[in-house]
Structure formats: structure tokens, C-alpha cells
Length: 215
Image (cartoon, one colour):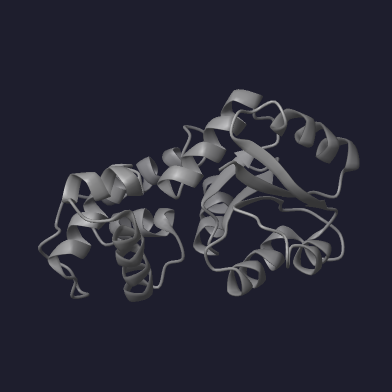
């Protein structure tokens, strides 16, 4: 089953170029396209989509406005934000709104392909210039140490195990094999963790764990 990707970007040439790049990837299929967030919200209904590549700066409705509205209607949808901005604060804002990843528009095709597969399989994507660097800075500045036994929220044993493995970048399939539970159970446990922590995605779980001195 291919990963079905929907593209939302206001620059037609960039959008067409991205479509051309995606069509070269194995296991990836273009589901649709939109020129702004409003058209995205209107047109994605009824189209089977796994992942959205969402530009931040667009007319009518920008990506930051569209993102929470999109996830409210399609909570299982995964979103990678696109932008020329790569500052830590900018990246963190997107992640806290529910994005699973963040790509610079200067990213090369190999990184785009890696990001799509990572988000589809792991639930998030980090690279040195955006998400991973932000998390590393957060850990370094806060001098974080493992404290999974000192949680303000009460988690079950399986929730703690899944959270630890998510933070180690294990995929849902790998977690299911490691813990001898079904992949669906892993996804259900992730959903419970999201509800308890007020996060929206696997990357949100990682950031929560970092902020709460859990990794």
C-alpha cells in the first residue's frame, strides 16, 4: 500500500516540482494538491490521504492556521510542515500544533523521501537543522536526565514502555515486536499517552518527555 501524500503550497511551480519528485519515490503516491489551507480543508475530504506536506506561508489561510483545523477533522493524519524558516522556535510552534515533522524548502529529494517514510513509520521526523537540533538544545539547556519513575501524570507500565521506545525512534511495528503486542495496540497506547499529555503526535510525546525530564 503506497503512502498517499497531499501537497498544499501556494507556489504552483514549487508544487508541480514537488509532485514530480514524489512520483519518483518507491511506495509514495500523490493524493492531491491545494494552493492554500482553505482549499486543502475543502478538498481533502473524501480523498484517501496518509500524509500532508503543508506550506506555512500561504494566502487565504496559512499552514499554521490550517494545521489544527485539519487535525481536528482528521486526527490520524500525519503532517510535515514546509518553510524557508528553520529557527528552533518556529519548528517547536509547528510541532506543538500537531505537526509530525518540519522540512526546509531547500531540502534535497533524498531528505524529503526519508522524512515521508520516517513520519509514516515512526510518527515523526528529525534532522540536524530542525527538530533534532531543537530537541538536543532543549535537553542540553535543561540538563535533562532519565526520570521515568518520577512522572506527574500516572502512566501504566505499557504506556511507559511505549513512551520510552517512541523516544528511541522505534516504529510502531518494531515496538509491537519488541513488546509482543499488536501494532494496533501500540497505536492505541500512543493515543492514550497523547490524551494524557495533551500532545497530538509521536513527536509531541518526545517533546513532552524532554520537557518533563523523562529523557
